[in-house]
Length: 508
Image (cartoon, rainbow, N blue to C red; front, side):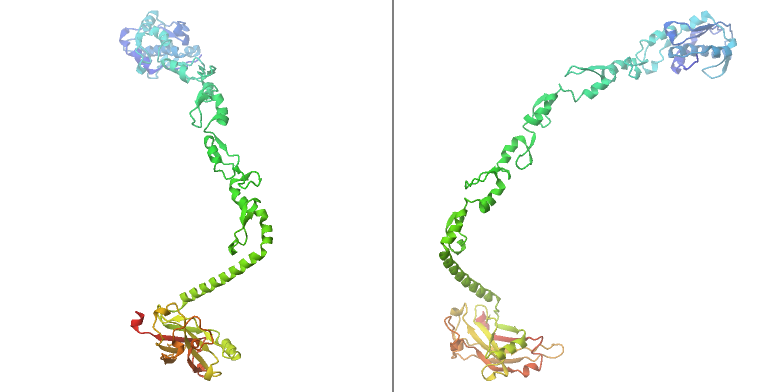
């Protein structure tokens, strides 16, 4: 067998600290070699060989430390083979110098002295306070709290004896543990897997409803009993907490409701009820389709057809009256729109587009008159309108453009002074580029005669044949030849301007 372990330095130092107990003159030693069984007093081998040396001899200390190291190797399972002893070559464990085995011999007396040496435990630096003779060291190891031993449950862990109880109780994977809930026994490793799944353990509901029960009952409670469990609405499919789903059904859009008209249609979804009553329900009361014309009849939807057949004449009369009212409203709206769009500053600039076509139309139609949009002399003033005969009128017919102005019934006539007596100016505008040449507008001005019927206060009852409705102006305002000389016609359009000179005090 081969020596496999070097004794810890603490063991050697413990013995060396008591070296003064040995004789200093001559040492006669016995080489005694121990195995791990030496702790129980079993002597492995013994060789007798006389050896003596001087106290000052180097071999003295070497042999002594050698014997100590061999002795101390035994408690840790160390061995020294007979082949090594036969070869007679050893090294001192202190300084590694070679030792001659031939010079070593046994000495029983010195053996007893060595075994009686007082020493400390090799675990003294770790906290063990044991001291005793060297021969008692093996028996001390069997109880030393700091000695490293394997777990008796064969879990592969090695630890100090003092840590063993804690390990056996809490950490050892091979320990036996009894579940406090179901009473089953497990190894420590299996118990860790058992924790958290024991069917007998008392647990709280995961939905935080406050209920507590054994784990084996939790699944059934969660599925069928827990008031905080989620459950889908069987009508709309959305999920709700169980104790709120009943309140949801009062508002669920897919909850089935009865038709309020008792038509017999089953299971109408709440969100479809309004459309059902309006479109599908045969028992719903509806108004006559001619309600806008004035018919107030109400009947079930299925009876509407019969009502229409019976009331055809009355419905036709109602529709005629409705059309008349709408025509009047349209005319009123048109008049209001015109009022909003007219000028209120006493100046009208009237653009006649498509001039050549309109001139041909005037030539074909005798005395064909074009009318401008109405305009006001000032805000809350007189309402006027300009008219033009493109092919002339009266003395200018066929050769000139004639232009006239007339007074129209206005919104504010009752607030104004009559007859109309303010200066009127007509112009046809030259469209030449001002940067190239100065525009030469043709302008005519007149002052209305207060005695003329044309400028008296108009009344809405006047017809088109009444002389007072005729305009006043210039039959020969501009000839057809002169209108072509400059840019009075440009882009097939002409501009006619009418302006009224109103005193500032009147406008104020």
